[in-house]
Amino acid sequence: MRTGLLLLLSVLLNLPLWAHKGKAQVSHKNVAPVVVVSSYNPDVKSISDNLSAFYEQYTKSGLPNPIAVEDINAQNLPDGKRWRIRLKRVLNKYYSRGNRPACIVLLGMEASSAYFSFDDDEKLRQTPVVVGMRSSAIVKMPQDSIDFKEWDPVAYDVTTDFKHFNIVGGEVYHYDMKKNFDLIKYFYPKCDTLTFMSDNTLGGVTMRALFKQYAKTDRRFVVRYIDGRTMTFVDADEAISNLPHTQAMLIGTWRVDNSNRYVVRNTTYAFCKNNPELPTFSISDVGLGHWPVGGYSPCYHIMGGTLADDVVAFLKTGKKKPVALANCKYIFDFDRLQDLHLSLDDINVKYEMVNMPMSIFKEYFKTIIIVFLLFIVLLSALIVSLYLLKRGKKLRLELLRQGKELLVAKYNAEQANLMKSRFIANMSHEIRTPLNAVMGFSQILTNDQIELTAEEKKQYGELIMVNGELLLKLIDDVLDISKIDAGKMHFNKGEYDVVSLIKTAAQSALANKKPGVDIMVETRVEHLQIATDRERLLQVLANLLNNAKKCTDSGKITICLDQYPEQRMIKISVSDTGCGIPVDKAEEVFERFKKLDAFRQGTGLGLAICKLIVEELGGKIWVDTDYTDGARFVFTHPM
Image 1 (cartoon, rainbow, N blue to C red):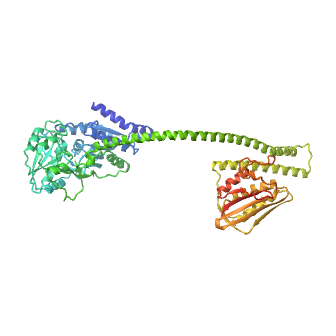
Image 2: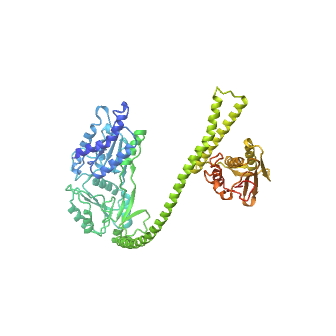
Image 3: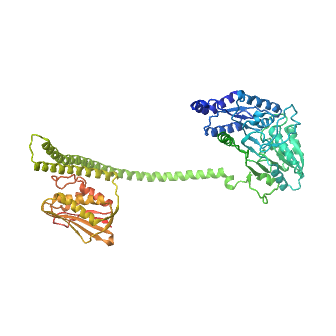
């Protein structure tokens, strides 16, 4: 089962790396692997979580080095004499034929303690190694067969005592005995005896060695031990029951007793129940929440991602990182503080609290939620009832409104269809006339059998030019109206002299006016600057002047400019002495495709375009129905 899990995990971890490797150059075929050695089977949750985090972070680097996952299958402490052998056997296959791993990652107490016991192995000492999932305190595994019940190792510090190994990074948990000793002294200044509790694991032995080492420097307490290597759960329970309340106890860890069986986590409830008044503290999270008063302990977390970062940094740059210490925190149990009549009022440290009493809202949270939900249901039912009544009335009104809208839509559709038909018919007629002229005169000019004088050729060429310009004007009008409808007509405003623009439009209109028609400009000022779009304003003036020229056979066309400073407006009018516009048609002339005289050339879009441009510029346009000598178009423009 274990072998199958290892094989499956190794395959899953290396699939992306193999894919990357297949795309790499030939020189990458024998890249040294990153060997991850864990203390336990990969199916153990803590190992699995850290391996997953390591793999996820490592694969982001794009390094070609594959990941190899191994373990030494550490079972229990008596099995410890085999850990060195298993580790050596696992690693030897990566040192064959002059090869070696790119980096070794050690996960767990057992794997790293076995590794750092090889002081005399030059290959291991030179291989880059990253350490994680263990405490900073470390004991070396014995090379000979000993009775682990009597084993009394020395505690080393992995961050300072192994400079002869090639440690390139890592993260470990730090158990600060001094801060926990000081905490006990703070709460119990008269206490002189301290019992340390540890279990039958390498972690327990390491904590015991660390405790013993520090106790020699702090001689405040007489120290005693509850050791899971020599005691069963029953023995430990009896020993704790007999401890007087004037003493204190510091918990290291308790998971395995001397029967080598893992105990359930809540066995510490029994310890507390048999001696609830005993001052108890913890350097880890064992029993926290029901037994210890508190303690200064590490912040346990998944560190696989951090270890991967250290490996990647070393493989990319060759730079080593010091082994980092995980953060620690003070944590206390509110209930136990109350039970033992202890106060944190004078303690000057940041801390976390468990079992804090809940507020009334939190205590009766479920009841409040149920009552609130019931109220919401009743309120919702009332709202729904009112809504349905209102909706019924609204639907009736909506049906009436939609009926009216359908009639309006039907009318608009009919009008749109009529306008489309009118547009097609009008455009067909308007385009055909100049096009026929262009085609006819072009055929005459290109026919070699027809002899033409130079004067006739010039005359026919001018006719072709006039009709071509007429076609271009028709197309421009259609394009302009389409741009306006689509909102794509751009206006580029600037400061311009409106008097100069009017004179320019008048001068342009002289080009093809009828004989006997004069074009005049009347203004009281020589110059007047306004903010406008020059081209669009000239387009409006040109359209109005063209209409006036079409309708005026004799007389004059007058462009008049007036200004109204109080209203910040100017008024421009184009008057002619032509046929005029009936009063009842004064509004219709601005509609699209509207022509009062069907026999006159034009699309009926010019005035519609003028109206849209003038309104976009901020003004209004209309027909002066009081003018009786012909037609007068007037429009305003902001100054």
